[in-house]
Length: 305
Image (cartoon, rainbow, N blue to C red):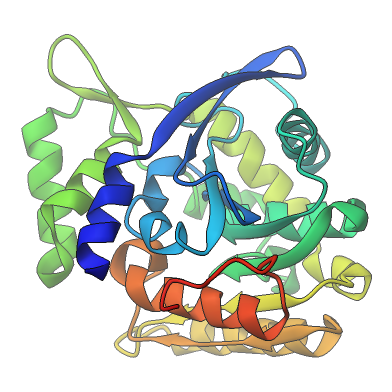
């Protein structure tokens, strides 16, 4: 019965386009009742990354996934990719949809957006959920200069890659985690050109502007300003041989959990960064449990009744 209802909700998803701040934005909506839960994708991703988890959340929340500026099917201006402008895009969305207070669930860079928004506009946030994001402080490592960040974290150049070749690359990278629906979701990061090659929806120039803003952000300065419930969901692969990097991440997450007054941490072990793709059911269950415990559900029945 639950599976049938989930399939029904997948069919019921609606795509919307809305004018905000003189730009047109795209968002997906799986349900229209319950406490609003706004899902924010990561850098170079888009709203479809939540296609597997959102239907499982829809019986409990009003679920929306928002294509942030420069991404997906939303507008692609040349400038203003700093956190202040990205946060004001989100504020405009809440105002347009008449949402007074929302739960924000941000993945990767989207977690940083959620953190920043909660610090700047605390009266508009019920809770934040940081899905392997929001707690990365690049400058915490003195060796991570902008020059090094720019060199090591620049996006790969997929422009002109044939679609079928990219699919094979994706399948090889995903290994046993590969599923047809994941391939479909990842391909949404790209436009398919007339010659059947791909081009990222987020341009290299825009990508680097966001990366610069991410490098400049110091999350630890925002932690004490977070007054709403906060759920931190870090992922970790036990097979990762970069022990120094793992230790640094663990230290940053421990610091975030200590400095955010209301923080709770749930680890996703043996899980890749893209938790919404690999562990959608567990992710949904953890979010629903968190919302129950903090009484965030507006009296709406949960998915398991």
